[in-house]
Amino acid sequence: MTTIDTAPLSYPFNLAESLALAEEYEQARNRPGLLKVQMAYGEPAWLVTRYAEARFVLGDQRFSRALGALHDEPRQSEGRRDSGILGMDPPDHTRLRTLVAKAFTVRQVEKLRPQVRQLTRELLDELEAAGPPVDLVDRYALPIPVAVICRMLGVPAEDRPRFRVWSDAALSTSSLTAAEFDANLEELRAYMGQLIEEHRQAPRDDLMTALIDARDVGDRLSELELVDLCVGILVAGHETTATQIPNFVLALLDHPGQLALLRERPQLIGNAVEELLRFVPLGSGAGQPRYATEDVEVGGTLVRAGTPVLIAMGAANRDALRFDSPGTLDISRAANQHLGFGHGVHHCLGAPLARLELQEALGALLTRFPGLRLAGDVEWKSQMLVRGPRVMPVGW
Amino acid sequence: MTWNVEIEPRQCIASGSCAAIAPDLFALDGSHARPLHDRIDEDERALDAADCCPVLALTVRDGAEVIGPRP
Image (cartoon, rainbow over all chains, first blue to last red; front, side):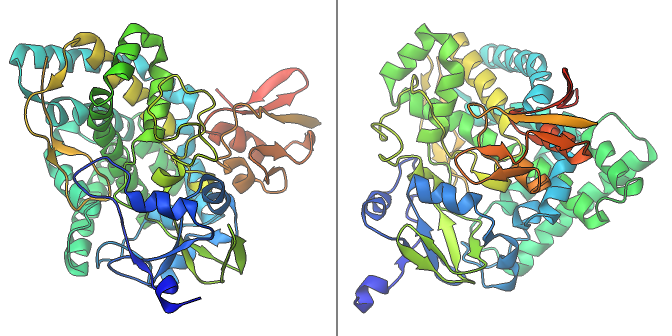
């Protein structure tokens, strides 16, 4: 082995201003073993790009998230993220996750479908009244998940402009210093702490009240865990869905045959959303490294104890060993067990809610505007963990 | 009193939450989770696991009656 072979590649590969999957991933998938990569900050890491190995690492308890706190974790910005529940291992992780998991099961979120449908109708009425061109992000993609998560959690939706700023910064990869990053998090925590106090004084029928009960009556989590869990649910509860709605629209506009098929057979919407979750690589790069707690062999590479592994879900979702014609968007694809929501104990808690919102938002939009098209230049988010349009003018 | 636990393999997405909640009752050692024993002693954690399964693939029965996931 030569030194050139072992020199880590600079990571992430994906361009911020596009939804394409970088070519480097395909090369990495096709060569044996794992690839060594170096992010802007932190120690070098192994990169997993194949489906089988991604599922293996994400599902194996010998890989730890919590151990990252003791290491110089690979990351895109200088500031260390306190990733809350995403940075925990069982049993701490399980203790917190079970407190909220019940609110996000398929059965619970299905009850929200009529409300979400009504909301899409109202927003589309407003778009029609305003007339084209309109910004799909600000007037449709963001308001839907924000309204839903605010109502579930018990956060006033009219505060959206305030937590929008904090939420953007929380997912930013720009060169925020560690101090700026912390200051932002403290503001968001103070905001949430205030809301929690209000809920303590006047309990309501929402998730925040249930979590306060779990703390005050059941003593099942600390005050900081309570605050951070609410912060996490608020941020994770809207940002990714709000980003994927315009991303999915862009992907469909880019594949007119698939768009026509979906319009012809609207009952395919559930399947289409799964395929879009597989096909659209949301992240600029992998994050949330898993640390080996002992020596483990992964795809022909020996991962030493104490070494971080990054999992590129977007690349694994295009692995030809798992998916036929992986680079083709096929909304009728069957048995689509993609990794869009991850895998293992950190599998997206909000997946059923995200699915429902994506199905309703996309379905209603395509039905209302048969002539939906881009009506101007897309302005991309830059320096964010998630990729997608910041502004997307559409007409119909 | 014993309960019957079952995981529907076609529904399971291997999120592993059941195995995390009660590793002595459930295992995720293949592409799907599975109960380690079909019949178990009454155990609140089995109901928690059924409630927390993101796709409701885990069912707990007391005789013929479905007691988990709880409504």
